[in-house]
Amino acid sequence: MGCGMNIRTKLFWTNGAVVVILTASLTFCLENYARSSMLDTLQESAGHSLSQLAENVDSALRSYEQVADYLYMDDLLQDRLLKKFDTYPEAHEEYFESVKPQLYSISSSTEIRDIAIYTDNSSFHVGSIRPLEEMSGLGLSQVQSCLEGGEVGTESLRTWSVSRDHPERLALTQRLNHLNSRSCLFLHIEMDASKVTDLIKMEGERSRFLVLLPDGASVMDSVEGSAESKAELIASLASAEGGRIVNLEGEDYLLNAQRLSSRNSVDGLQVASLLPLAELEAKTSVIRQMAILFFLLMLAAFAIVNFIVSGRITRRLRQLSSKMRRTDMDSLQPIGHVRGNDEVSHLGHMFNDMVNRMQRLLGEVYESELREKELQLRTKEAELYALQTQINPHYLYNTLNSIRGNLLENGDRPNAEIVGLLAKSFRQMLGKSGGTIPLAEELGIVETYLRIQAFRYPDRLRYRIDVDEKLLRLRVPKLSLQILVENAIVHGLEPKESPTTIVVSAEMEDEAILLRVEDDGAGLEPARAAQIQAKLSESSEDGNHIGLVNVHQRLQSFGSEYGIRLAGKPGEGAEASMRIPLYERIGTT
Image 1: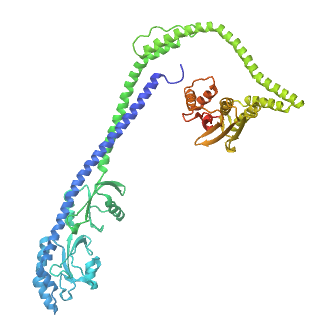
Image 2: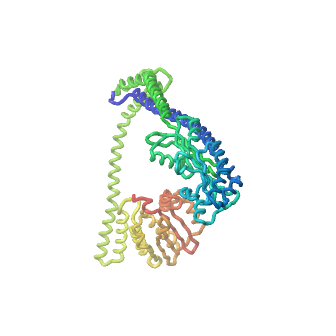
């Protein structure tokens, strides 16, 4: 038995890995889902509380704005405030008889901490009627225009701010210009921020609530914190619509914010709540512990069940493996019958069939030994024959060179030249082996062949090779161009009595080499050209064109766009073109 794990162990650990991954994933998903659900519940509850708080704050501020509206519509009061007095006693008398009772009545009934009217009427600065210069620090544009004596607009002004002298108070400023649209009268009411604090206590003590003015000033914060923490929180409120989690001073909070927009005076005012997530984290920790416990219990249960089941499944496999190992490979006897009708019994039957077949094959091997010896003798004979066929062409090449030397010694240079061309032709044929050669070598074979034919037809054959030097290094199938030239000699030159010119050319066309062999010989009828082309495409081995078929079929294996094309007209010559893929496409073999 090998040192590797048996099939039972592999099955146990494979199933274990799958179960661990699935159970861990399920536990993780359930924990995240529970936390997300609790967070959604908290966020929904916080959203409802915040909406109610925003509505209560809006109502509380509206009650003080109603006081401002009342005084804004009081034209009699504004007429008294704009009246010029010649002496201070007259102004003093008017204030205590008409203005102060009215202001006192308003402040006592609405729990206003301070109420004042600021005016540029210097003759009526008595009690709560104060100089307009005291409002210069509030940064109100209409107040600045009045102080600088510039053009004062007719629009009304109402704004909320934090009291300059009392930061724990909330201030409402209202311009009183109903009687005279350009008057410089300003009402200033201050109230305790505790009115808002009481509303927050009604909403609960777990959350931290803030009320911020449009300019970012904090009206109220239910929890005291550092200046840096408050600045970070105010910066976070810019994107807190809808709720988000923020970290302040190392603790996570669920931040919700709502802007008031019911009236222009409160437009932009924000009410925000911070709900600590410590309670959520505690509940999440409990869920996580329960999930881990569930995970461990599942693993323990699986380990027990998997151990038992894997043992039962692999028991018959182990029995079959034991029988196979006891099989004598020399005698090759089948194992006993394997019970059952499952994959294990099928393996046993297949093993017995394999042993029976091996017995038959061994008998056939002994019978074939004599045939093998006979084949060895025939192989030696074939090797001798191949050696002989290799020697014969070289012998012929050497003999031709000897004849050429003898003719040169006797002064017969023409016959010596043709014998030399024949020897050169044989040497080129016996040159480099392989399916492709450089175009320059192929052109050398063609030129040697044409020179030999020129001796045969000295007055009838003219030829020209027109190929750019840049193309000479490209590779083409060996003897492919020579076959086209031979075809031109046989079918173009020989049937014609008058001189015939053969032109060999080559050019690049897209990603291929295009070779042409043209002649002005006997010509080729279009019907005959189509017939030959069809035989080339159908792999028909025409005895007159077997070379063309071989070359064409080899090129066609690289694509239908490659191969040999024939064209011509009777009495006007013929053209044979061959489109060959580039060297990288056809290789060098």
